[in-house]
Length: 199
Image (cartoon, rainbow, N blue to C red; front, top):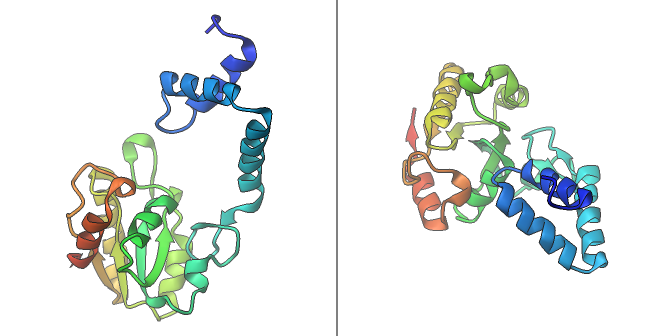
């Protein structure tokens, strides 16, 4: 950059590494941090370090959690007979906002994307197979994003799960093609879950 002080340049560069943050947004955030009191910057840095120190993967579903198992896996009010498979932990929040789904989850932490070098071995699948072997799961709902990678991942998983005798369904396309679940409103997400179909 050269036009700004080195510490500002460094924070802008670090912020740019976050998804969806371009150079202008990174600069805006950096200057916002600078304008805030030191205590606010300290709280932000402590919160970032705290999340890195205290949050881990749930050993059953791969959700980010402070406890293991996570609250969804540990809850006696959630049915272990249904597993909703999502790409990322924040997709769970979109589904939970509907207040319609009472099963458990499985987080893949990605999707199949040969063009980006992401294959089945890069997805978190081993504990899903373990859960299916337990014999309590009756349905797996594939709630990957309705885009090329999400569809390819859903088809791949359906082909592997169907021979086990577990019902495999896909969320209905109330969620528009090419969008992310993270941005779906409650009504759209609720309709997508209700209109899911067997694969």
